[in-house]
Length: 149
Image (cartoon, rainbow, N blue to C red; front, side, top):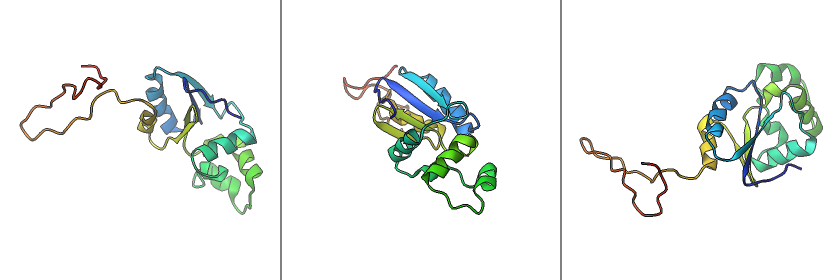
């Protein structure tokens, strides 16, 4: 089982992923404690893979980029079960399609680097787009707006 802590962000990624590298920049800006789990170095258990896939609403093979050149070599002509997909992820981590962020009991499949912002609170009020020629109003709309001027 994966420990769930609201004060800590777990980030499961392959160091080969450009999305993961960019998302790390967003993570470093967080005030939360971050635990990075590079699956190239840390093999996950079957239970952990199952928990990650269920958390993001897919199956274990749904975490794999089947179009990746390495995956095509590994999965050609294959009929795989859950344990086979786990072995593929642990032995060929570059096929891990998207990083997974976890905060407490919330999971997020990070398809773009900025997806990680979904775990952050709003730092500024919702701003209305000004009409052409008007200045942007950046004053707090209420006393509950929490942002830096």
